[in-house]
Image (cartoon, rainbow, N blue to C red; front, side, top):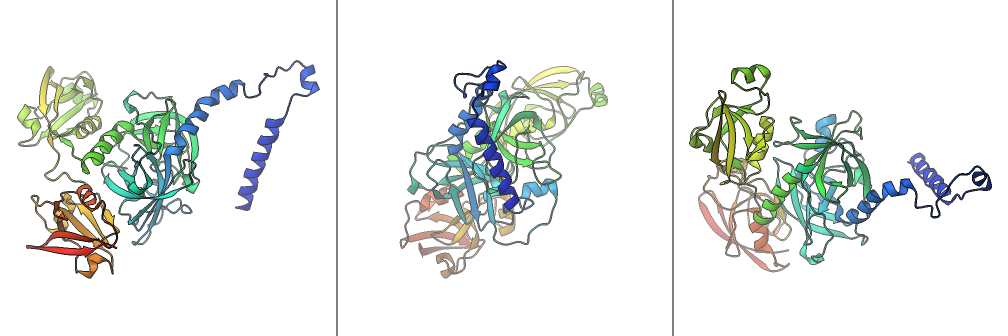
Length: 481
């Protein structure tokens, strides 16, 4: 550490010396030209957009500390501790138990909503946000919801801290061009408010097995452990991606980083903030890519598109008349390059959306309208949140929770997934697997409604829960701590 610190000091000292150097007589004698103002150089002019971006955007980027979560925490001294970096680098897994996770995030509303990666905050009992707006504040935050299929989460700074926070605007990632300059801001290795620049190296990266729905932006802006959840920003000062993972042989930056596109962020943010849950469009087909031989066999002169290999019985696709062997060429007039693109486009549309598909059926071009269904019988996604007042953690009724705790698809409420020893919930005998159906006489069907029902409750006040365990329903009165 001493050697590193000395190196940094030497570089800073050299920079200051160079900055203060004025033209000497020898320089003037040889006709070297100096501007009247030293800041008025071509280099300074080139740097100005980056300087302006850093000044304006850094206050909206935060450092997140999540305590008591799953075994996915990030230790700033262990580059392999982040789940997504371990996915690429390998390395030992930690033993299960409470962990401390650290990462980046960025504020997206004046009310204090923060976007980050789900793997940074998932299952946390306590969330602390370190502000970088000059106040040096450390404020608590509440988990709003997350989507494991895209690794996106929303947390919110608690109401007691006000509602006038600096925030970043989400841009249009579809308009990005390879070669554009971008800036990544985050907290690599716990170094807060670090800024790095690079370009867009590629778009539409899929098949990386990072998340279920992949359409990653690739960049060579320096991204390291701790950058997870931070923004990737264009020179118009709009967020065009969320930094999520890198490829490396050493555990550090090697010029290949991946960010979730902003158009996916917008879709998930709006659903989580407004509804607390994520629903997805459903077409009902199995797809495969097209090689030259298949293109010839199915009467197509292109390998672009998505070949339908199966149509689900009773699905929107079957009802619309799609058939096995059809090649989907366009969605709402936009070309489809491969099956992954079509799948991503469909799941980002809300159920009930009417889309127009252009297909090639044995050489004949057809336009087929389809009204999308809803993906899955139960579309709630995991959104575990902890109540410090009651000493319990609840989650949505996901398909996994329904199976684990033997609920039915028709059940409504939130399921208690853990109870803190010695807590109010523990003292009255509440157990994991209990279904919470109402809080203070307000029905709750998801985690957001559960949190809303507890708003305004203070320590010492009574909270009335209507719960069901097995076939037995019961009221519990808990004293908030």
